[in-house]
Image 1 (cartoon, rainbow, N blue to C red):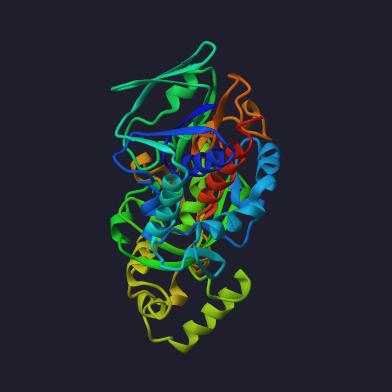
Image 2 (cartoon, one colour; image 1 turned 45 degrees about the vertical axis):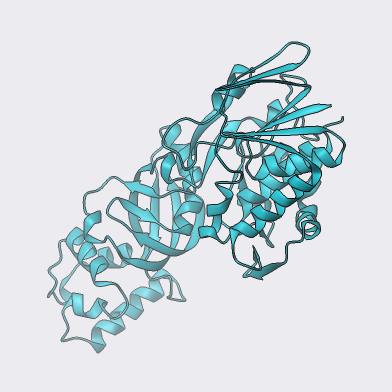
Length: 398
């Protein structure tokens, strides 16, 4: 049986290895001049390839019941797979990295296995068209190939300004959930962001839609001239993209005093006591002990409070509200070129969850980012790539 894998990224490489081990003749067609190009930059080049905390709520899909079935089939085998490839890994706060802390180590063991198995690799060719009669015909920008089965591991639009290979699956009859940037920065609606640009601060975040809290995160927020960034922001961005596509209004509430261990009313009392202790200080001077001066200036400007005003003379409630839940009005996400992954893709209702074979075209399999699954930061997106590649590879003979 001849199988062509379109895409030499994480899911495609794993699928190819598993299929070859099952006896198939496998060819990988990769549009770039090397395999695993995106894999090399994951985790800032360190490749956080798995996470000890395999909470299913770290993953997102419009068909979570189907995703759960896919995920539970293989998630306990991922570390064993890399053990057998020879990877020695280290765990840091539940995040798994190759012991070298180099993404190239992960890619290299995959490449070595591909070479040892005799898998054919075609680099620098872009697939333009896929058609099927009794067999598949694949047309690239320079060649035509035929095969019995096809694995679509084409990735997503993340990290590129235009293009992507979604049209290939649409031409084969699949429908897409709207594809949007995910694990990406958030752009705000207001005009004061240049005043806080460059600030980093620990915070707690709540994504609010109407009166409903959609998701909560905590961590370091990076305040930028367009809005906000940071891992905790990235983990909100997939939901933000889906909601904005439905024209929903969103606000991120930022608790700027997340270090305070107590309730909002207790924080207000703490602030009152601090004002008594520093009664001769202006409000800016009083706040500088626990808040970045750029954030202070933004808050005082928004509340129309003079920097030398005394605490007892200002709108205390407004100040407490803003420190406890600063309201960042979301306009958009940054574009695909800034995104680490995408949300959306082919609906899981259009594949067999046991094999990931297309329910539209017999012999066509889909894995990785082309499917409507995305995860939080922390190795979850690579986690789904490994799992989906393993499932396809092990069921190619079904």
